[in-house]
Length: 102
Figure 1 (cartoon, rainbow, N blue to C red):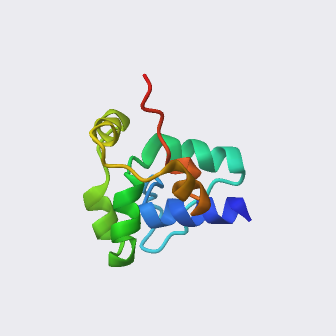
Figure 2 (cartoon, one colour; figure 1 turned 90 degrees about the vertical axis):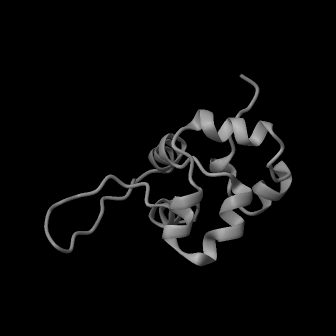
């Protein structure tokens, strides 16, 4: 389902706030599609091209290519580092798209 895919993406990108409940704790994942999209839109500032290139290298590699802010990501995309929109949608990564028309 779409919710499971977004929850997996949240875990892969490390977008959950850290919970210090003990040595081993299970993070509280969003329970609805809307909550999952909002969490990713608010915390996952990563270029889809970079994501597809480094995702098999692990979470540390993904964190290295993540941007500190949405604005920083938009600047990079405007400079031409992008993937065609249809490819992003076919990969099911629509939630990582950013609007650069502001």
